[in-house]
Amino acid sequence: MLQTQSSGKTGAEMNPSYSDSVYFGTCTRCNQAVYRAGQACQAMGRLFHSACFICSVCSKTLSGKPFYTVSGMIYCEDDFLFSGVHPSPEVCNSCGFLITDVILQARGKPYHPSCFRCVVCRQSLEDQPFAVDSHRRIYCVSDYHRVQAPRCAACRLPILPTEGSTESIRVTSCDGNYHVECYRPGVNLI
Image 1 (cartoon, one colour):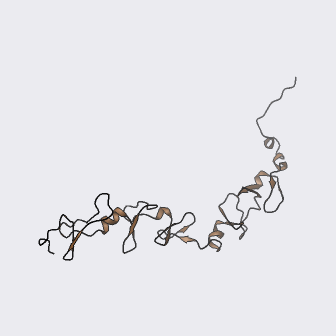
Image 2 (image 1 turned 45 degrees about the horizontal axis):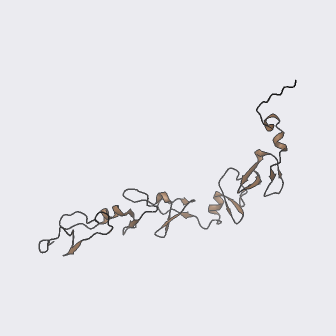
């Protein structure tokens, strides 16, 4: 009677030369056969020798690193951002760092989405209405009204929009601004 015993190991673990003889495909760059798994990488749905997957500018190997492709050329992050391949990298108007991912354009300026925030409450304003003061500072609408709203000449409180409205109603008289309920003709003289 013949008994077999399984070690639970793959062919590559039992015989180190096994992975050297398995054909994985043809390298996209050099068109040579790829046999060793440890010396191969897959990117953009294609197979490369690790030594063949390199930056088109500096020849730095890119296996396991961030890379960019433009018109079939492969670039490392530095060459993509600084060699003129990338159409002038954008610098965030708020933090001053390069934007290498999503660019939020507001007021004709680029921002990281996480940097586009209200100067008062620091709430993110991505996909939110916002207001800008005369010094080009960005506010959420409610903070803009609280900070920039004219003050009532009678009670000295800001004249804010009513609940659910985006417009405020005020009376202007004798170079002063008043809440409608605070204005008393002939009484409110500055």
